[in-house]
Structure formats: structure tokens, C-alpha cells
Image (cartoon, rainbow, N blue to C red; front, side):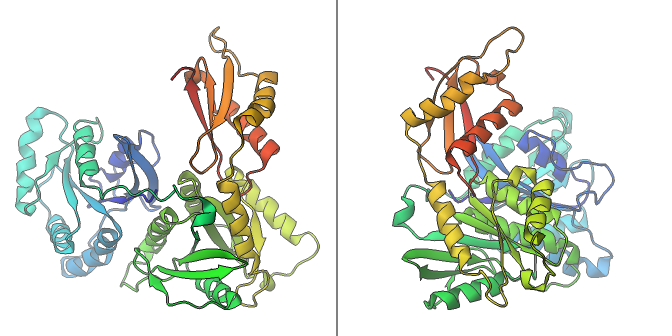
Length: 441
């Protein structure tokens, strides 16, 4: 399923991160009354009324001086607008309309993108009249909300869902009947384009590149060892004046779009650089989206090595990202071609794992036996009885466990069941999901 992207934009300290957390129903973005706190951008998968979408929390749009207003606003806001399927323009209901608000509104209207104007900090009905101050920004009718208390946020989300593009389902076809979409993602200058060029040359099937739906991303079809692939290269950032602090965010935003169109995600790392939080954030998005995942450690030819170098790197990688211990690491050199061909082999193997199904009788003969041998702990005198396990039909591997009190299952026990599934059946390179259901539902 390709998820649409909803981007929250606005001036600093209007409550973007608070709204982001409110929609996700958890505290993920750091909130502080001081402007400019959201320096590391956040993105996550949100859901409302059965519809999922990628939600993006951006940093505040700051104008250094009046002379630089149009250039600064264009440099930061236009990128966010271009990458989004829907823009939520957040305003401060306790302040008058600011010139920056007017500039952002003009950019949204010129883009032609669907947009919603939300006036924040309207904490009660006595302040509803303040919303009308913002009707001067254009034809878009504003809605008053309070991200802090949650007032009218549900109404805002109803508007969001109504304006999203129609959902498209792409997971139905069997893996063997469709090409494997492999997204190459990572920070700038880690060698993504070099890897794609090398793979295309190895396959000896250079095809006219097909422009992807994401700006600066190119889809390249190729065939190798009887398998069809579509490589999604996310390399390339437009050069825009004085937006260097935005580069990591917009790289990640384009990566999100590529991930949503992919079956397998290759997160490229630079062996000569320290591991970045950004690398793991991109991997987290891939895992949450249910995509296959592996790490490609590039520029391995530049590293002085002994017999334990790769093992030490993998150990450090797993120590820093324990949640991705199931994701393999491949050491290569996109420049020399060393082990580049194994990228497609690994992607094909992970694609097979992603679509693999375990028969229900086999699940209950193995996993159910393990669970019954170590049942979940009782909660306040209530014992949890596990009935049976089955696998849902859609990828990634999703296992439904039926029991009498699914609401009492804690995260530690869910990790235990996940680990037992991996020990029994592998599933290397793919996220494994557990769904707890009450018997009879």
C-alpha cells in the first residue's frame, strides 16, 4: 500500500510538534515553548478512520529579515509543499496574521496542492471568533483546533482523510508475478547512484529510465538471474540557497516516498563515516511500512581490514540498532563493483521471505507448543489462555494469536513470541508482526 504524505508546515512555535504528537497519540516529537526546537525532523505512520498516511512534522519556517522573506520562505516551504500529497498549514490563533503566514499561504495556493488551514490554540468556544481573522489568507476556510487539549482535532483529521488521494492496493499480486521494487536510500553521497549504475551495467539490460512519482527519484527496470527488478534511486537534492539545515529532512522525506513504493529497502551506509541517527530513522520507516530491509555498507574497499573487521562492524551496528538485528548487512564497493551483484540476490531472498506463509497446523505444532511451555504472566489474578495461532495472508509476515485477554499482553511477551518465530522459521530481512485477538472475534 502506497501511503500518502501529509506535511504540517507553519511558523515556529505555532504547535506543529504538539499536533504531530496528538495525531499519533504518543509523545514522539520534542515540544518546547522556545522556537526552533524541532531541529531533527520527525515522520511516522498515522491512522484515522481506517486510513493510514505518512505524517511529517517540519521545523518552523524562520525568516531572517524582511528583505529575505520570499527567498527564505520559498527555499523551505516550497520543498515541503512539493513533496506532500496534502498540506496542513498550522497558524497561531493567539496572534495576528504574520507576513510569513501570508507568504506561505501564497505558496500553497500557487502549488495547487490540496491544503487545510488549521488555526491552533483555540482552546474553547469563546475563542472561535479568533479563527475568522485568518480568512484573509485566501479561499481556504480555516478550522479552529487545540492541539494541546485535542479540541476539534478529530474534525481536522476527518478533513485530512477526505482530501487524501484514493487508496491504491499493490500488495495483492504474488511476488513471482511482479517485479521486485528495490529502493536505494540513505544520506547524500553514500554512493546510491553509483550502486544503481553498477547494477544496471552488471545486468547488461540498460532500459530507458522511467520517471518516478517522487521528484529527483528515477525508476530503472532491469532483469538479473531470471528475476525482474525496479531500482528506485533516491539520489539527488535540488540546490537551494541557505537550506543546508533542511537537507537531512528532505532527503528523509523523499526516502519515505520511495519506501512506500518499494518491496525491499536497501539502506546504504558509508563505511568511512560514523553511523547516523538518520540512517536508523529511515530503517524504522521501512520496518513500520512492512518493507523488507537490509543494510549495504559501501566504500568497504577504503577500510583497513583484518579477519574480524566485518564482524565487528555488524556487532556495532546491531548494538546501536537492536531492533534491526534481523536485517542483514552486505559489505560492498559501488566504485569497484566488489560484491555489488549480491545486492540483487539478497533483495530476491528477502522478497521470498516477505511473502512466505507458514501453514496453520505447522504453526500450532511449533509456536503454540513454545508459547504453552512459557505462557504470558497473569495480570491482577487474570490468567491468559492462548488458543491458537494463524498467519494473515498479506505481507509482511503477520501472525494472529487468539487468546482470552489480548489487552493484557505486554511488549516483553510479544518480543518473546516474535523471537521464537524467527528462531523457528527465519524471516531474515523482514519485519514480523504479532496481532493479539480475542477468540471468536
